[in-house]
Figure: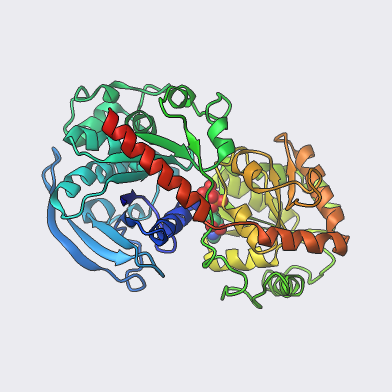
Length: 492
Ligand code: ADP
């Protein structure tokens, strides 16, 4: 099958969150199954191209817009450690390093409405370019696989051009939808808004909503875990799009993400000191913990469990529960390290917390892939009190490194973490239901008790590390989905 994977971020080239990890791994798994999968990514000015070589593949392609015809080149590289072709869409006006360099990152939603407008314009333009570029190159996909709101409008624009290809839209996070005033978006593209019925849809805010458009226009929609696929049909988790999702002819499928088990492997990870495997995990983790405690100037003490949390500091991740649990945590002889970056108010709250409890808590603000790996290796428990969680990769990486998740029972966390209390023989972590500090505290207290019983802890760590993280099963599920999309596209 010929598949074009269209995406806004990709590990290890440019990464903000789990979407990048999926983009860097699923195409490789599909390729291993014998499929001709290629990936299209914007050529961001912030990518370090000395590390990721590429060559010009197609020159001087054109894209029409009212602002004038844009001339675009496409460079070809490879997803690192694979032979999957990676096409960089070279459009400096949209994605290059501009005099105002803050525009050159991936997303700017946190930089206010001007930033968000710019972000909308560049991803609308990226999606707009896709069908026109496909018309001019000598490779045609049978399926175009779009990811999240950034490329959700691609199925609409393919239809507008009459381009015949099936489409799949994967929702990695319904919390971000790509909303803006319809008249302005149409003005960027020279559309009246009457060209297709779907263009007249508006969301509950009265905005044009790219994810909503995609949900209606694509052949098949899916999301990244079975539980989240059910949750998003409800008003509690549907973020205003539950009716759009429920109304689809083909139900929203839930396919769990896998992990890149070569990249995330404690036995070979050069960020660790030392590396370890299932057999040497207890000693290996203890040494990494000592190392980390020294680096972060925490008391070097193996009797204290080290809880870690890594992720975007957004309201989704629910770390305010941790901030509110300060007095209780303070009485527990444990340590806590949070690594993340995100909303200024969440950063400020956690920074106040870390300051107050500096005897045992640290906040590392920023994006640091090397420190993240060391933390997974050093950590005993991974805190993930998410409000909602489409799939979540951090808890899987944590398990792979023998760091046991303490997580809220929502979305993909339900599908990937088995609570030891529910299933002592298969359990890999600790789950709690209500989004409350009390519920989280009781899960941490259970974990704390397990930590003090090495005979219970060791098999749990081994079991967590043995969890099936591979992409293989999910890659097959995506192939079924592509077949479904092709079938749908040919019957409408
Ligand atoms: P989401 O996609 O909601 O951001 P996921 O759990 O699916 O969350 O994936 C997050 C990915 O990004 C993981 O690989 C995690 O290790 C990584 N990550 C998130 N924040 C940071 C950070 N501040 N530094 C390093 N890695 C990070």
